[in-house]
Image (cartoon, rainbow, N blue to C red; front, side):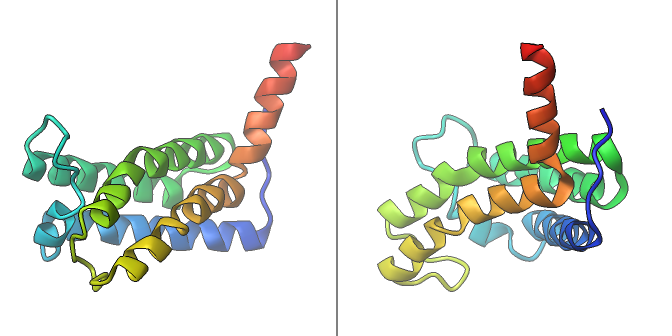
Length: 143
């Protein structure tokens, strides 16, 4: 199943790839402390380990978005969307616990940020052709 994307989708895929790559590098370096603020306190793992691992995942996803094409690109888009869903509890935790990080120093700012996570999921699926790929897979299964 080949997935084709428009030039506009490719541009947004590249932008998302660059964003994720840089966010991953930030996890490992200059913004590590701020990313620690997003690790939910109930998570039964060392917070620093979570930040490091999620940083490496973001770097990998960013590189995948930048360099994988067609069907592989659609698959990485789906995986990226799932990653954005998986890290959403960290954003909720930051809001619920009133933790300031990334210049989100009010409850209002932290709440508004929550509404951007679905946008990131949609961005990943749309820009890579992930939605099309998922539809093709579902159609093939039902046939």
